[in-house]
Amino acid sequence: MRRLPILLILLALAGAGPAVPVRAATPAAVAGCATEAAPMLAFGDTGPCVTAVQHLLGEAGYDLPDTGRFDADTRAAVRRFQASRQGVAITGRVTPETWAALAGAGRRYSIERGPVEGDHVLLTFDDCPTSLAAFRATLLAAERAGIRLVLFPYGTCQAAGLFDEDFARAHGHPVYSHSATHAHLDALPRAGVLTELDEPAIQGGYGRPPYGGWNWTVLDAFAERGMRLWTWTLDTLDWMGRSRAELVDDVVRHAVPGDSVLLHMQYAGFDAAALTAIKDGLAARGLAVCRNTGPVSADTDPMC
Image 1 (cartoon, one colour):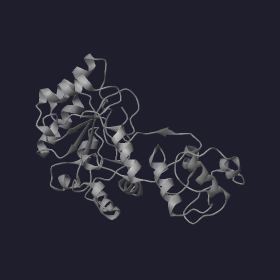
Image 2 (image 1 turned 90 degrees about the horizontal axis):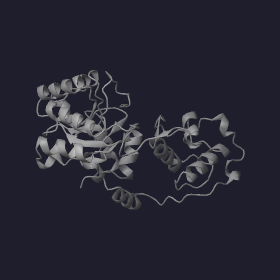
Image 3 (image 1 turned 180 degrees about the vertical axis):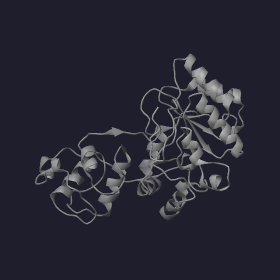
Image 4 (image 1 turned 180 degrees about the horizontal axis):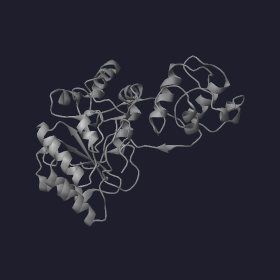
């Protein structure tokens, strides 16, 4: 299956999380709170501004009663909302940026596409390269070709000396978490997910759960660590042993503007010839890969 099955995600969430009815606006629910003043709110606070936050979250689709008490359910809903908005820190506290996002400002990100907006095709690579030499050679070739890759290694790969996040970022390739040991995060309790997100896992603003498996527990654990989920929109199925030519043909034929393409560092698509062929093939269709504009930091969004 090439495209990420959005319907399956929605069905999974329907079973994994609470119902999320959308409420009609009730002006009385925000009465008594000067929301334009953007008061800071946190766990334990009470009052009309907490009620206003709860109501606005309800309008955004979160199943949360207007109690006026900033309880654990409110904090969890705030974290989930923050995780759905680009440019809003995931703190569980209601900050001025959170107020602005609740009011409809800010830019959404997509779990499937990540933070990248626009018409570029983004090549993303998971797991672990076969050697550090091959890893460095491929990243240097991508940099020379003007291609920005986004890399999701698991932590034990770097610990084994097969991956170097500083080298990658210095050559224009963002690096994000793929867990510590490549575990099935959606099969773990919350504490287990949090452990998988700690070192030796890569630290940063985004993460890709292994096998694309996630649920509310995984989403909340990522939010607690200040991370957003980022999966993919086009799966090349390179793990099935497909050749370089097959992978290039697949991406060139099927990629559409804005795609996040899933490949793996240990398979045939992770080399200079494949990357150049993908770039040239997409260009012939009027599409562009994400452009490498130089070094990035752990906090840099992979803008193209």
